[in-house]
Image (cartoon, rainbow, N blue to C red):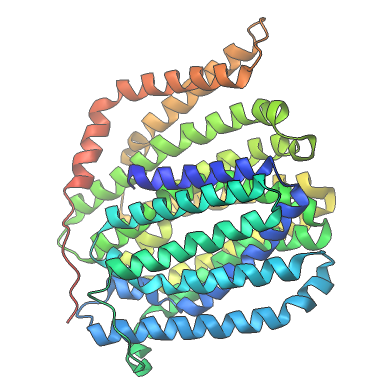
Length: 469
């Protein structure tokens, strides 16, 4: 949950916004529609092994090498199948240009898979600074290259190149950093225990994938590439809290608590500190985004993209809520309840898919509203799961959320005052953003003691080296 992780997420989002100046929603939609297929390849290839490699004790170097070669081989096989099926997928959804884009992104997927095992070994070592630095460097270099290509007229291929360059750098750097733990081994039978350990994790991840990507596939099939482009870019904004905070922090929380050595009160302090810090960052951030972006989109982006200003105010608050509710998966894994996590994932997937199917009958905005309503209910339920499984006190959780609630309320109050102010400024979104930032930072100052307390709780975690025989 470092500043570098936040930088990486912000840089990636900024690059997407910059690329929106040079490409149309329909071109962005080709990439957004292709992305679920690429993510699916990675998940099927992973087989839940990345999580298992982080947690299993007494891991041998030959087992790591076998997992490394197995994942690359499986990734190449799945990629080949997808390339063969690409023309038929394009015919089914009637999206010109999809075969080339999907094939190019498939190559990027193989590079991403190559980085899975070395990255897992760094995570096992709790070496999160190297992970964040590598991810940030890859995004920065690929982003500059993609923007230059887009400015020169490369169109959708600028987006494809962004993925390929990012994952190529990730694969090279992670393999170099984890070189002492990697080896080439084709004794794939060694991976049997890892796959068994990660089986429930894989099934849960597949269901989560379906819940998070069914909307893209449905929009692309029913409404076309332009609609999925609008929704896809808006969804990228919604995922900021997850990418920048929750997913990195979940790995830290899983690796830390799985090693044991913490009594009940210590574990509770770590979990509450993680939730508190996450909410304090993500809640005001997403509230401010939903307040500022509509003015920005109407003033800066081309008319083809302006429908985002209607979509984002709905999705942004849900992204903030999901940033803390998503810790339920980590808490369940630490408690050894992977099967329960799978059951919750089934219910989440079914409810989300039903919301998409029903909502799309009223067009894109109808589906957005349905997804937000159902997603909010599910998120509140998952927060209850975190409290129950971790045996937290509701009052302590409420106290942990006070800084987030106060800073968000301050942001809303500033926005209300700003919009009621008569003078019209030439770039109102800049002045509003500055006012919101000042208000949020002022509230943070009031809770400085609480923030320091959380920092001490998180800094007290042990940082053992990975045990690799």
